[in-house]
Image 1 (cartoon, one colour):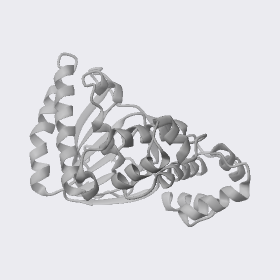
Image 2 (cartoon, one colour):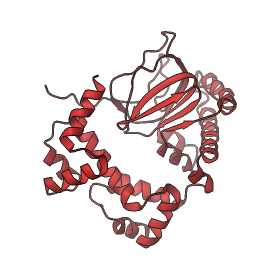
Image 3 (cartoon, rainbow, N blue to C red):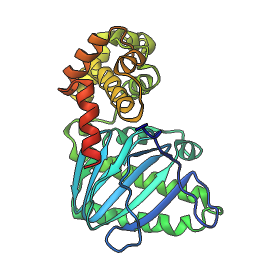
Length: 287
């Protein structure tokens, strides 16, 4: 049976025709007021879920994340996402485009927190966010008149979530994400299909490969080559799931001329052969 093309969702517009650059809502999964998404999809926008009560199970880029009671769930544009039997939960959902915030703030350091998909929080931390979220909902109803106000409130929410990440993570807590690390991550996203060596990125950043490795190690706990390879593996997973391409062509598209080399590379990083991953992920999703 042919595979369907990947559904891609934009930020929703409401019945009043409010802008698709931003949306915010409060969801109660147990009340029947919101129909949960269970089919894999991806978005053109950033998504922030603030879990206030209950539990949820989210799959983001084929990894399972379970959250209980109070948590942040963050997703970047392009990530594959679906929910499985979340049960009863109450959460706020914010979606927005990067262009929306870039129009009101030249500082884009908030982007880096979206490299983390799940952060379990304490009850008092969630409670400190709720007034901002409720105010966002109120201002959103008047979005056409209060666009700048909404942007500033959103930036305030993201400042708070970034501070929670810093407090809860030993690595992020050492210091703010470095400019070099942010540039490295952006370059990987742009060039990972053709630039596969640390030296490639070091040259683009005008630093030595050793210095780049040191910074990446400090900020992430792993080396630069692993970060590059993980992005290539993720793209292979997405293609194996969403397309009908032969495995050798998937390998070719991420830079492997030799199918056997691609198979070894994929198994090294995932523990599975490409065909086994393809079979197992389809089985897991439709189980």
